[in-house]
Structure formats: structure tokens, C-alpha cells
Image 1 (cartoon, rainbow, N blue to C red):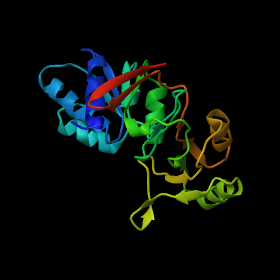
Image 2: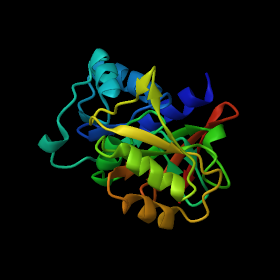
Image 3: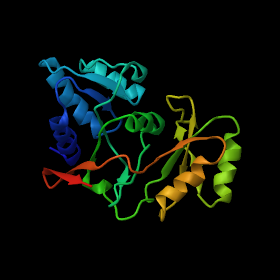
Image 4: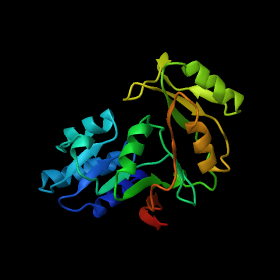
Length: 221
């Protein structure tokens, strides 16, 4: 069993009958969804909301019914992955292109658990490119703004064309190398017209499940 599967399946232990669950997007949450499907088919009763079309298709294929986030009163628990996580429980997310919906679901959840493999734990954020979702109108001007700030931007591609998010936007990945002040950087990026949301997730989780050395390590803030 690989580290992603270990972490993804461990998170299932936090789900209770009757919960409304937020399902994240990515290669580690894949294992959470697959295991959750087994439990649902065995009688576990949950309501689920999804952070992407990809997750919705995967969940429904496993017998998990997906509800519209606008139709649920609350989300008890969201289980999601992350591309980088530092010692302060700040993270970079959006490698799978779902950062906007992931942040909306996380913000409206009572509890958020991140499931990751050990390679995602870092001393300093920034080696993984920081995704920024931007509207199409004026996107090249937004790109130029990032360049002027020294953020080394690159449009994410989906084949020969720009990658398009579920919300119909583009993603610009910032090659920062090192992020000294995540909160300040988030404020700078989100203040630029044309930016929808950036992939810095600050103060959104206090529980991380890490697959490492054949076991699941739970890190609490």
C-alpha cells in the first residue's frame, strides 16, 4: 500500500453516519473516495459535496450521491489533498486545477483534513508552483502584472490550449521558489483585478494525515 493510499483511507475513520462530507480533488483523495464508496454501498449514510467535476464523476461511479453545495445546511468534514504543507499548517493547493471550489468548500466546513504523502511536507512553501485562477478577460495583462512583480508566471496548458477550470477560468502558475510570508503574498495576489483566487490555503486546517513508512501519521496543530 503506497503512502497516498494509507493517508487517504485513514481519513475515513473521521467520518460518522449522517455526516455531510466535502470531497476534495487529487490523487490522494482518490483513495478516500474509493474507500468511502465501499462504506456507502455497505449502508453508511452521508451527504456529499464535490470540489470538481472529476471528483463528482469518481464519487458517483462509486455510488456516492453528490449534492449541490447550495442545498446543504453545513459541511461537517472536508477531506482534501495538498501539493505542499509547511510546519505552520499553511499549504499550496490547486495542482489539480480545483483550487477555487476547494477553497469555497473548505471555508464552509466545520473541519478540514488534508491527506498527503510524506513528500508534500516542506520546511518552506514555494518550490511547487503557486496556482492562481484568473478570469479570461485581460488575462495577458494579469500575466504581465505577475511578471512585473517578479513572480515568474506561466499559463497552465491543457494540451495545445490554455487549461480551463470547472468555473471557466484560466490558471497562471507562479514559479516562486520560496514564499517568505504566505499571508502577505496572498493579499498581494488577490488584490490584483482579474484574479479570482490563489492557491495559498492559510489557516484552513488543523489536522493533517501523512502516509509515511507504511503507516499513517496524524499531525495536529
